[in-house]
Amino acid sequence: MVVTRHLLPSIEARLGELFDATFNQADLPLTHEQLVAAVQEADVLVPTVTDRIDAELIAAAGPQLGLIANFGAGVDHIDLAAARARRIIVTNTPGVFTDDTADLTMALIIGVPRRLREGTALIRRHEWTGWAPSVLLGRKLGGKVLGIVGMGRIGQAVAWRARAFGLTIRYHNRHRLPQAIETMFGAEYVEDLDTLLRDADIVTLHAPATEATRGMISAERIASMKPGATIVNTARADLIDYEAMIAALESGHLGGAGLDVFPQEPKVDDRLVALPNVIAQPHIGSATVEGREASGEKVIANIRFWADGHRPPDQVLEGLF
Image 1: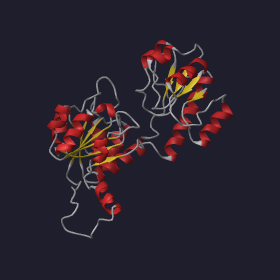
Image 2: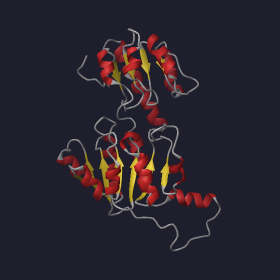
Image 3: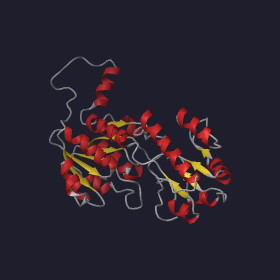
Image 4: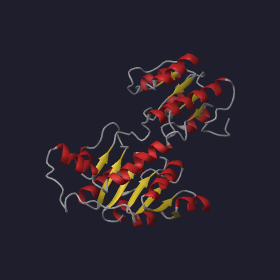
């Protein structure tokens, strides 16, 4: 087994006890050549979102590779069709980061309209001259429309939190949720994404990156949004045309953005860093001790089930093996 990134010590210790595991103590993303070497020798690969497991890499795998036990819920960095063709089982760790990501999303939903980045910068520059009735005026949340794009586990967790702040919840999803769930969250379904984007004061993205969703927040759709609207993205950078978003932020059409994901991580565009109305975080949506530990435990459980000849509980390619 090859584990591509440094995990929590308790998880690595357990993996080392149970399996013949090789760890990445440097905790830098493996190069393509190192990943090729790993899949040619390992029977189990434990990758993360920083590893591109594409068709070329899977084609280079040795016949012994039987399981890709992903650390994390998202699997858009893995070519699932190529894995299926090679009869390699893919598992993930769903559910463990739901609350953590929703908490960070809510922090951005609050922080951008209330200009928390600008206030913090003012204090750190020692330029604050005291309370004043017209300084750093933000926007209140109560009564504003929150548009949630993608109403899965995380989208629903955000809706639950946002309702307590008096936000009006509207959502767009591939399929409408049952009425009972809509009632629980006080959420209104909007079938047309363009309508949702035009009406929302704050848009938060919680869709996976697929062929259907990549670039869905396009230049045209950003232009159609309300002047002063906010975009929050803790999902995948591929969902947004970042060039168009930056232009809209610089022009003042968008009021701000809260971002935890970027197109060329770990690089962050200097224009985003310079904008005072952007709160940028280093992909920390799942960065809690509890969440990372729970994800590691799911990885261990999936490997143990597979090693014992059983179907892993979190198999992604359900029904195909």
